[in-house]
Image (cartoon, rainbow, N blue to C red; front, side, top):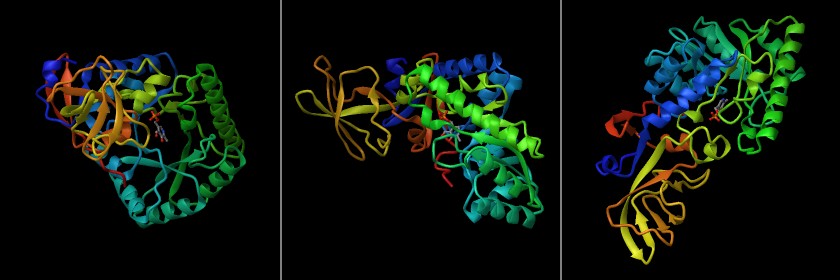
Length: 362
Ligand SMILES: Cc1ncc(COP(=O)(O)O)c(C=O)c1O
């Protein structure tokens, strides 16, 4: 990124290097082209509909709709022209269920389910508004966050869904996110394949019992490269890769971080000690601290709401007013704190893009 372009951006701010993002997208598109699976790009990372449109255009026919995390995100993306949306989470709250059902009056929006209570609640709302709601069963592949266990518990839930007047079971979802931090590629590959085989075995059990399921969607940015090798997986739903971050880059170095947090040095409190104008209101630290893009030996001492006190490396010397770029540990939660992102393409400032689905956590 050109230093003189950054000089004119008011801080703290998020800055997107468009070229790196496009490279990440093209890497994914090339991968998809070599497989039989479709890409359902998960939009909960970028939260910018323009970026989802771009990814779909680059991937072409193998891009099948988008995934979102929440109804609020689905509403934004539906308004931006997306007509095949999977809420890759459960929709639990009665108000949210009502919004999901109403959204289906004009845009196909599916969600995943993992309990009989939720199935009943969804069916009641769908009946009230005379909608046939399409759902997928969420299968717990070992993450232990959501989902029913594979095989018999999934069959039991599938049979329960079949009894409902206004629900259609269209597929199974598995998300093996617990494998993403595994840096040993061989172990990650083997464990991902085991997870995918469970998903396929569950589909087979359902189909032997009268269902006709062939839609299996799974995987995120750390495991998508292994799941298509298991016959039967039809779709992957990664999201973080588009921007990447420090965490993902350590596991999948092919995806380079495209977004930085731009800060300004505002004080030099003692020898090698400086204060930056950005703290936890700009970058959350719950999942780890950012790293210093151009100063690998720089360290955080204290991070407060609006400031970071840092200790410069032995050879680093900063001037007051100097801009410093940080690479977020976890980009998804960082993006969610910002209204817009400054975009630089081929070294030129091309504008400030609104993060339209930011804060839609409901
Ligand atoms: C259900 C589901 N699918 C896909 C993803 C995308 O994973 P990643 O962010 O690793 O690309 C997530 C991420 O949270 C998820 O929860």
